[in-house]
Amino acid sequence: MIYTVECSFADPASEAEWNNFYSLEKLPALISVTGFHTSQRFKAVGASCPVYLALHTIDDLDVLTGDEYRRKGGGNFAKWQPHITDWHRNLYSGIGRAPAVKADEWLVLCASGPDALIRMGLQPLAMHAVALEKSPERRWLAVLPRGSARFLENPPDGAYLYSPMTAQLTSAPADSTAHPPAKHE
Image (cartoon, rainbow, N blue to C red; front, top):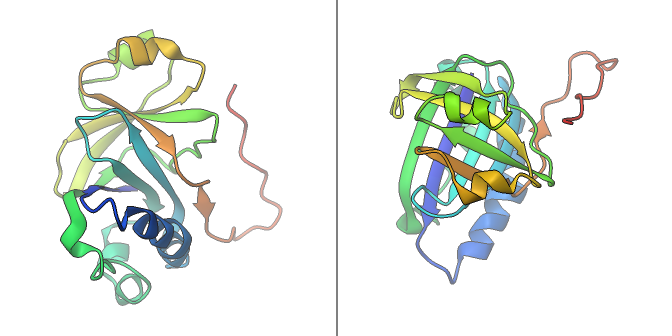
């Protein structure tokens, strides 16, 4: 399942410190939780959506309600809470692991349907909200090469573009002979 956490941050004076905490401490803590498989952070390109997005692959909702999650960083924002705005959490089914988005790519999330992304030559993955806020109810996720200026000129309604802030973290594989992920072409 895909667990999304979206928010904006309202204090420019402490935003860099908060980003360091989230990227360098919180993500590694979360990926160590049993049931977390991938974690990656993004920053919105453009406006009209929360500025920050964390995208995680987890087993199920029980991971987020467990003691290990609470101990290792789930909800660990006390110092930053007064500055976190436009906060949303959702759990989506429909795809396996979240794709790793490289530095030369963008993540696209779209709530208005897959057609516009398909016309752009992308292969959107359909997600359906099953827990937490359940809004938007449906989303399509795709990875876009950075050279695709067409998206920036005329983005589809309900589509948002995100730049990766971190590499995708993965939990230790159960099988050490696992193959590396395929490259996007």
